[in-house]
Structures are given as C-alpha cells and as structure tokens.
Image 1 (tube, protein in one colour):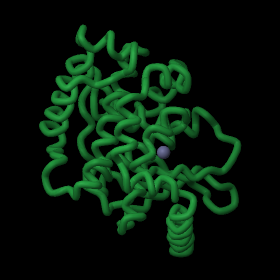
Image 2 (spheres, helix red, strand yellow; image 1 turned 90 degrees about the vertical axis):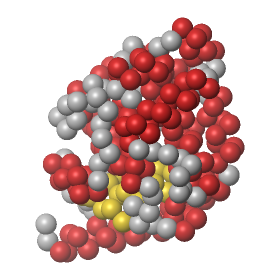
Image 3 (cartoon, rainbow, N blue to C red; image 1 turned 45 degrees about the horizontal axis):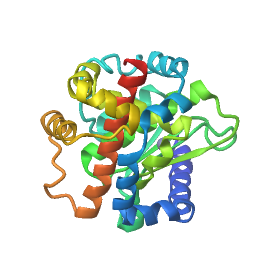
Image 4 (cartoon, rainbow, N blue to C red; image 1 turned 60 degrees about the vertical axis):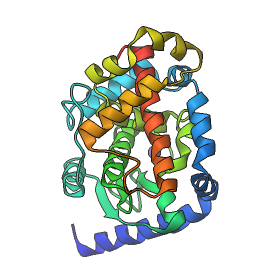
Length: 267
Ligand SMILES: [Zn+2]
C-alpha cells in the first residue's frame, strides 16, 4: 500500500471524526447522561426487536460468513484482542484499519466506525477504533465493526454509508438490522452458548424475557462475574464514573441481546 493511499485514509478518518461532532450531537448529549439510556435499555424487549429486525436466515448467513475468521465463536469466549491482533484480522479481511485515540468529552462518546467500500474514494472498507477507551472496550468496538463488515455482504446496502458507533446509542441499534447484526457478533463473542445457557436459561428467566426482557439481580451478578473472570473487567476500578456508566449500558445491552438470541433462536 503506497503512502498516498495512507494519506487518503488518514484524511478520510479525520473528516469523519470532525463530522461526527456535528452529526452525532444528540448521541454526544446522550453520552453525557447515560442514566437515561440505561433506564431505557433495562426496559426494552429485546426478543421482539430481534425477531422483527434480524431473521433467522440472516443470522445463519452472518454466522457462516464469520466462521472464516472466528471459528470458535459461540463455542468459547473470544478473548480480548489487542490492537496489533485487530490489525492482523483487518488485513486478513482486506479492510483498511485505523486505531487512534479520539479524546475529550465529545471524542470519547465515539467508539469507532465502519465505512463500506466507496467506489471512488475507498477501494476497500475502513474500520476505525477509538483507542482512548479501555482496551476491552476497544476490542469490543473492533468486533462490532467486523460485524458490520460481514453484515454488509448479507444486507448489500445500495448506498455508501458510515456507521458511527456511539456508546450511548444502544437502544437505537435494536431497530437497525445492520447495527443489530454487528452487535450479535459481540454478544456471541462474549457469551458463547454454554455460558449463555448457564446464565440465562433458568426457569425464573423465561417468563420475564417474554414480558419485558428484564435482567434479574441474580443474572446481572452472574454477568459481572463472567466478565471479571474471562476479561478481567471491573467497572468500579479506575474507570471515570461517566465512562463506566456508558460501559454499563453496553454491558446490559450485549447481555440482553445474548439472552434474546437464546430465547428466540435457541442459539
Ligand atoms: Zn455500528
């Protein structure tokens, strides 16, 4: 890859990041008040949204495609990927990859983005991850963007699109098939089937998921233990409060989505 192409990518990343401050104003504002998003997520019915926006067929197509890079997906937890490993995967997928910090309140609201191939500007898709975040969050962002990459093949969007990933935006992902598909990959990576069955497939859970899809205290405590054991994640240790509340939104979102996958598709 020549330096001219690198410069082109650099300037495109810069343009998208600058644009995100404007187009993502609502998400940045939401990121400042994560409590609101948290309450909304806790109440959302994930099963109904999953059924409506991601068919079993689309899901199967996604899993078959992903098998090439993550053959152990849904069998064991996919470990945290350091940036060097992410670069390797991106290169294998023939995707441009940019990992750099984007800081400040507005910058931190953004986790990353995925741009599908632009005929004139980009010969290959582009993934950006914001490395100002906790390393596990960066790894999750990468997984989400890789999900977009495979979802693009399945949904074949007619238009050029930039998928921005904001921390506070999880509720909106539920009604967008592309975002939902990208998130499914994260949920399966974090909670393979044996873990999901242990945490979620309990009699006291099934009735609840049918109604509101609410997490019980017992399930939530198992989720925290799982994330601590497998990924060493402790939201109370050394992460600034607002950021940790936003991560908590993500934690609840991916857990509820995993639960819905089990309940709706027995996966
Ligand atoms: Zn996305």
